[in-house]
Length: 301
Image (cartoon, rainbow, N blue to C red; front, side, top):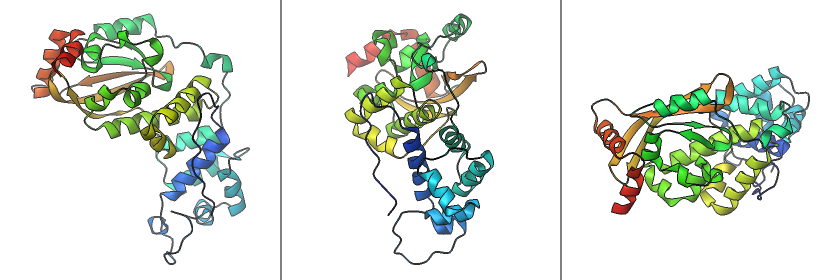
């Protein structure tokens, strides 16, 4: 068998790009069955889940030896055309295709930039502060929350009370029980966060702060280990989240992600409710409470 268990990273251990590439390709291959891609199915006794390497190589139009080297983490000199063919064979999403490219053909980053605190432009700070009636915040690398407005504090908690290093979605979702209660579909939120971190890891495998975060969460939280081992990736986008706020109860909010054109590693996230809905009324009530909303709600529990 060519499968092996996902190694559990340790705090401070650097992410191995070759291992990441190998495991990503293996897990994408494992989720496909021969009949999914038009190949004949021969019996039940298959040694590996999903497609075999030779089947994937056949679909992509490359030799088995070439694909095997790639899946073993040796993406050196692989062409964009070959990666495109493998992505099509694996039926990768756009986000997964981008992740594969980052892992196989990494861009060179200046190491000194990875440790610098992320800065938000003053004008953007002013804009987020003036957004009235809806939660808004800016998220950066490693799921770090950089700035937020009054409504975000009312809905998600007053992040100013946390040390800067703890203003991080991954830390809050996996390490703080109140966030497990806040998100009705906690599993979906957790999977989203891990998918974003996987994309970040593909772009910046040498980031020591990211590898330290992944290692710490892997040690402290079994759910994170399970989701991280799945190697799923996701881009920040748009959608719907159902929240159960301790003060106003359940809300259905629509979120939108606006990636900054001059800084692709920062995004503005906004949440809004359907006009005239009970969720819109709940937001209006929270707006009247402001940053005291979370404390007041906690006191009623």
